[in-house]
Length: 86
Image 1 (cartoon, rainbow, N blue to C red):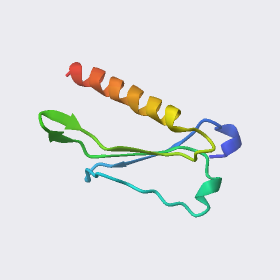
Image 2: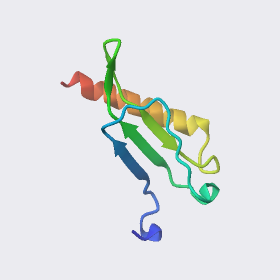
Image 3: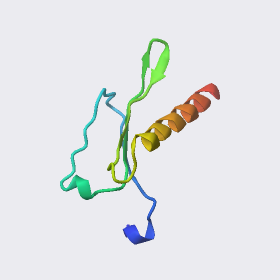
């Protein structure tokens, strides 16, 4: 893809065979990489709730904690809504 034609794209990776507690994405010259990277792993049951690890890697020049918190809050709300439909 040519980035000029896709200004709102982001990288997304799924690791369905692994439920992790922490994930660190190291990029060469990562301080120059402004697109978000979203990773998620296998869900697991924990204390009667389904839990799924999600990691968002984003350059602080592109967003701060408020925007990242909003991403997690919206994702949590959507996942709860989807689980209620089951």
